[in-house]
Image (cartoon, rainbow, N blue to C red):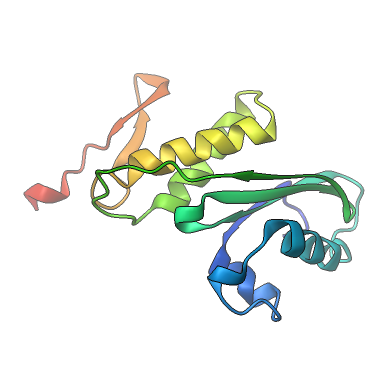
Length: 151
């Protein structure tokens, strides 16, 4: 974790780092994220700016930008609701993909988080992480070639 510029984890993983936080309903980004960033800052040997993100299932995602434990900004992004949820498998990975794609495309971290929730929302409309980057157009995602309904 000390070598990473961006760390993404879900609420349950986060709970293991912050023992006083005991259930998902009690998560509050403004209260909990600064605490864990200060705690993790001692493990980070340099002064680079880092992004720490917690995905929160149907509540979206929260992130804090920090430099050596000093908070530069906190941002919450609500989940995008869909009336077509089929399978939530891979939603967190889809969020991470969308966010990293946004960052690598030169977007600010807050906008990159928006891309993360958009891709996660698309992901849950199919079976188990079935969206993938289009090999012919990396700026577009399409259903993956594997179709679980045929196996």
